[in-house]
Length: 337
Image 1: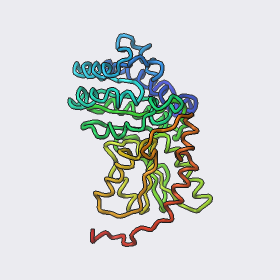
Image 2 (image 1 turned 45 degrees about the vertical axis):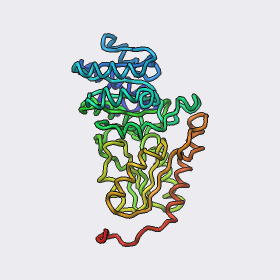
Image 3 (image 1 turned 90 degrees about the vertical axis):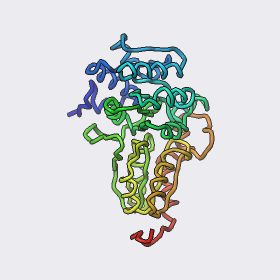
Image 4 (image 1 turned 180 degrees about the horizontal axis):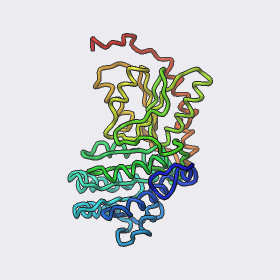
């Protein structure tokens, strides 16, 4: 029997729908039960799939034209009027072109504007550098009051959208452009903002990942278990801010080797967030960040770029194997630290 996700589609549909399509349909269902929810876009209703909400509630939908700064300023005004605006555009436009409005108009006042950013990371790779977005974690997590979420698949996108509607203050949710295969078989799991999910337990190394990297890491973990006998713990850190410190430190104690995987610049993203938690704890471990190594991404189709930058299962297998050869401090008590 199909598992109900709380919307008018079920988990089986996730295999044929993009995450942004699921977002649009989820938002439409939320709108039926809460007339405070409104939609705003900058001429990208079809592209971001918020068009589903627009068709259902035309009187609660606002297209401001190709003016992202204005879109978020309008969203802030709607929030000040007691509404819950969902603003949708491409990630690179939300975090950089309209960065000042995100910071000053929305976050400074801690307004409940939900920014659902599509085409994130390198998912729109063939569109070129102007449409790649490997800086948004760094930008958004550095803005006070902002919650930052990167779902692993369409099912988790729906869970995140539903959760953020109930969350005070601004929220940034990053999703990709196209079809990303589902990680979850159904929605029968506890999704909570700020609480990581252990997708696979392991004792030799922990890989902390988010977004498209979660499924690839699960596939890599299976390969490593079968070919190398390596036990890999896989943690889906779907919330970049606030980050789950408890899950990180438990993994440090349990496995002593931590690898982060992200479709983002290794500067300022998930890896830096995890590394800061480890450094502040005083606990030693082998630690490595893997993602885009401080460069502008070359142009190509997403699946080719994931392979080129080692963000696919094969690349993650190589990263784990390289880390397994490194030593860590044998003293496990940390009483002297």
